[in-house]
Length: 93
Image (cartoon, rainbow, N blue to C red; front, side, top):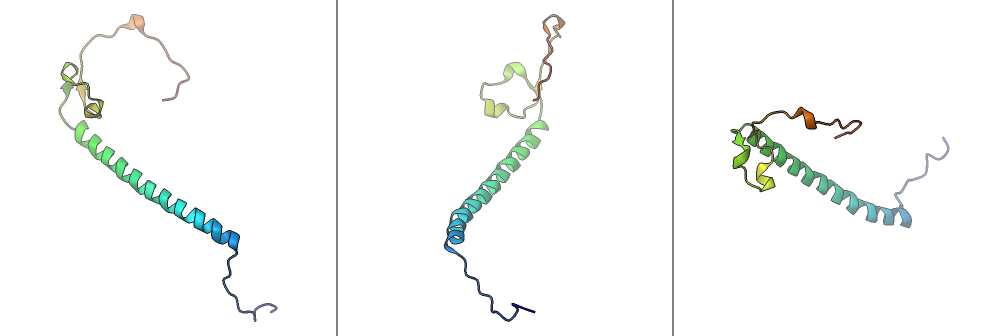
């Protein structure tokens, strides 16, 4: 049982203290950023759920503001033009 009679004391070195003082605020700011992003995502999910369950709007009646068009169901009519189709292969969206 060699070495168990010593009293252990916490004595951090200068390098570890400086590293802690640099890294700890960075980690706190990253955690705060994650919480903020979570709130933003929650707001987007709420907005999507509200708008996708709403009534359809005719494409001709839409305004140009892109933010007001997000997640809005749109009703369109037309015909398929098979002569002008093309295939985009090996693309990830």
